[in-house]
Length: 109
Image (cartoon, rainbow, N blue to C red; front, side, top):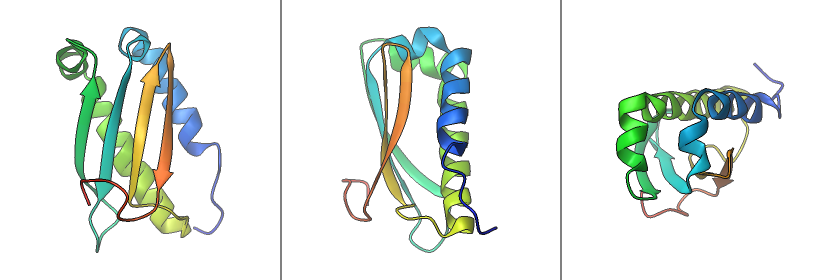
């Protein structure tokens, strides 16, 4: 795979937001990182409002977001798109987006 589709991540995150509108109305962020030697998600840290973490877990949002992040990391690896190892997903006011950060930028690395 050589051509990176810039809309791949935004489209899937928008679909997730439509599936879980109650979760993405609340403010939150998920810091994530991938394995050094493999294009796979290795850790996340959640900062969310009050009971949203529990709702995110029970509703399936958490699992779906983690699966998406793993897919994004793998896709970026196959396309040689950088950065690809660390980032932050932010959500609130019905919106969700991902900001990719240089390797070593998060406390998870």
